[in-house]
Length: 454
Image (cartoon, rainbow, N blue to C red):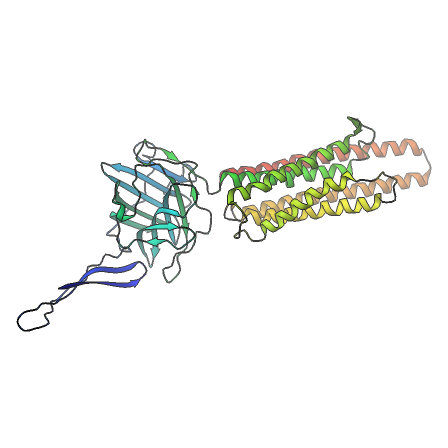
């Protein structure tokens, strides 16, 4: 009778099928032991080392490649690279990326990680790289396989990059738990940290996910992907348009341009009021559409988004209150007009301040994760730009009023001087408005471009 022994050192270093003592029975019972050896099948010990970075020159010709950013060179420090090359019944896989912890890819039947997905991880641990297969179920820790279905594993650590390559059969038995590679799958690409006790941590940013399913055994392609779902990009873009551009222009027009267009009518109403109302209703509409999108994406409330969703709900509520308050606006000379003015102003100002705070928090959430610290500096620059132009118009208004008061005191050519001062003030305001709109749109385009590149 022979027993086999399994010895575990840590979660991914273990030995299996170690021959135990041989137990035999004859006329006289006796214990017979034989010497035995340990066969290491540790999945953290690939058998060879790579000597140079991977080459992307064959991508789209003989290899199916996934790159992030799209078209990047795997020799550079900011490129995540994954390639598949079919060789009869085998598939050569090469993966590299800038990480001091781990890089991984997974094949999935949907765009949500965790539905029994087929994962492959290259884990850096104590100057070695372990190449492991695992199954991803729900939000749980990966279930690593006790036996690797991979062959000819090799790795390299250099210049801040993890590189690993391996071969596996395109078709594997169901008992081995791996997907067959000749089917259509979404492809995930992720990276993260590894603790000192060799425990991998959840990826600190959203994984790259391909926009559709691909068959890696089909015609070679060279594709990119996005680390932010399209619906989340739409959410962020609409909120930027609403709370960076339309609302701020609408407020400035109402606050500083009543005297400029006080006698000009558009569809029976003063121009400043029509522009203000149109921009504010656009803000509410864009906010309402954008507000729904994360709930559609998550299928409910997100517990991992911190204060962002709470502040977002507050902003949405305040945005809906503004047109309701405006609908009950009393006449200009009514006693309650002052109360309306303060209520309308305070509600709108609170919404704008909270919207900026919410955008600050949302930019660094994993689902969007704009480049850091670029996003913070850019948003600070926008706030400084807006406040600076606002202060400039306030100072200009104060100086204009002071100038008019001086002219009235002098009582010399009052009417002509007042008209000239007002004309000069109106021209200055129009110039400032044009400059503000151009700068505002420049900031907006910059953020929208970055969102498109994520």
